[in-house]
Image (cartoon, rainbow, N blue to C red; front, side):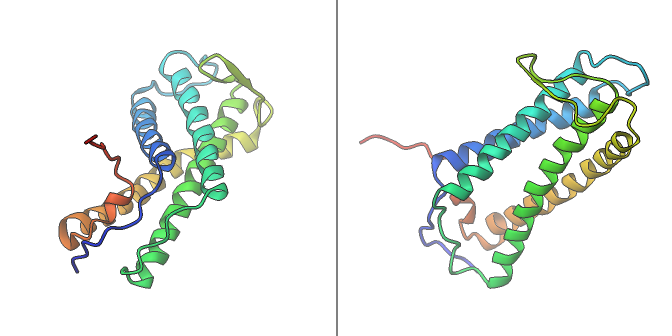
Length: 185
């Protein structure tokens, strides 16, 4: 299944949103796994505060990315790929968007129930989503922790599909989202 035809690429903005969110999610996972164990009454300092700020940044970028995707024309799906691959790709991409948005909101709610101010690197203060001590906020915090694993699994499936396309089928589908360095003549 080797396809080498030139495939329409995503524009620079979509590629930029994609790779910037990827980079921020890598940083976010590193922060989440290296920050101290959260305890009752602990202030959101250091890595915890950075984790909250990166969460806000990721949520904002994903909202901008979704708006851009809706408001602009995107390249058509590769007609040489089977229908099931189009459906699988659409499902995985939709699930990635949904999971990231839910993770941002559940993390924000958990921080709110702890009485923590959620800011974008100390520049933009966000309102609390739930009251301090809220049982709903606690439950959403537990959902947040569980969904981190779910997101890793879905990202792993996405990366596995990319690997199959690049290494096995060699169909150059990855070229649609890969940044291009253009040489001037």
